[in-house]
Amino acid sequence: MLAKRLQGPGNFPDEARVPKGLQVIVQKCLQPIQSRESDVASQSTRYTSVGEVLDDLRRFTKRRPPKFAPDVNWLHRVIRWLLRHPTFFAGMILLIAILTSTVAWEFIAHRRSVQTAKSSIDAIERTYVSLGSEPDGKVIRESITAVSTIRTRLLFQWSFATEKQAVLRYRLASVIHNHSTSPANLFAATKQYAVTEEYWRGHQGPRAAVLRGDRANCHLKLAKFLSQSAVNSRERYHKCQRQQHEDDCLRYYHASSTNLTDADSAIETARRLGASEIDVERARNMLSQLREALGEPTR
Image (cartoon, rainbow, N blue to C red; front, side, top):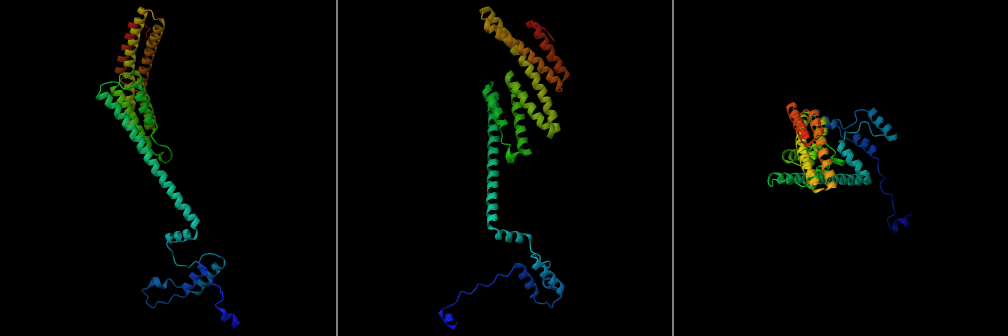
């Protein structure tokens, strides 16, 4: 043995790791007794009786945490638990990073889609106000598509995103309603009014009531310009008759009859939406006179 000792230091085992629960019990037993009565916090760190020590020792043998262990902040507990589980901690960090980047990307995509819709509506309004002309139907359709495809899915399926979409729909419909003279564009405006009203009916009742009145007035305006379109189609029909273009004659005559039927439906829709009875009666009288002038049967 002496020879082995002289050969060099042996491979002695490392100090045994003391379990955490036992460390707490020993530390509480070794706490010095405080003589000052005012130091209540120091006195409370020491066991007050042998029964408390035995209770904690029994819990330790059953692999349960000490009952009389000093209170530890929950944040410290979480940090210690995460440090004991580094794989889970790394996974949490990765998950938080993915969620943060997803939220940021969704927010940026939402803002871009809203800005695109606003720009398209501004362009339509400039065409009406500054140039005094009717935008091409393709431009109107692109603007409707831009508003309809505002980013509202995934994390932004919340009220503020859909509310922003509803506000832009209402603005687009109002711009077309106030400035357009095209039946096709006015019909598109009534569709946007209807979609917005359906959303606001479940979320904002007073605004839905105001929008319902705007929608009724838009239908009356649609009926007016459908009637004018019917007159124009009938004039083209008579011109084709003089030039003996039978195919065009049939097309214009059918268009004229269809416009009159659509105008009558628009007036009826305006009545159901609560339009003024005076305005509805005036529109019906105008349409009846037009039917008589064109030789169409009155309703």
